[in-house]
Length: 266
Image (cartoon, helix red, strand yellow):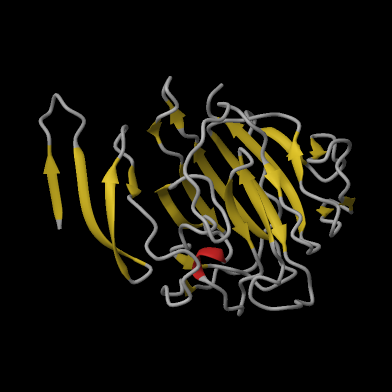
């Protein structure tokens, strides 16, 4: 069902009832005509939330070429664009063309700060796989240090849907599950629009995220309820317009390669 309202001189709203992960979902039209889901489809971490359908995407390809207007954050040679969140140099292991989490060393973040962005990164869960549920190839990419897209070995691994790979953690499960097996390279392409705050600290426009996982659309311009969190959905709090991107140390030796960003506010 589609319902329009507003005249041509107004921003036009559009409501669409659609199916998302097997549940009805309400979508709303944001400024600029982009559609975004109005809210998470299930209670947080609900294990009775419908599981995203697994799909096959074929083998991984070579690292994607970096666009000419992108900022290369990691090309496989050094960690100079990254710092430990505790201060100092990034403490992760530098391998041949990749970096690997040293469990217990802590998260790392970019030297540069960003607002709206397009982010590309490639990652691989440890092989052979060990553990189950959330204790298997767990990490995460945080936009502005607050808004997480989950990284997890979700291949033949059951967990709560809003915590599996490419979930907006604790809020939105992916539309489908295009995970490759552990040890194979996976790719994320993320478009992030930061929240906008008014002079009094009110939220003028909430954050939005679009994610392609292994080339497949899995988050379709979803509207975040606030920062992501475990067993909580905290409200927005005013923060700077530009903050670093960070990668999480969740005690698993996940690998990363070919990370670049396009600054959409330059």
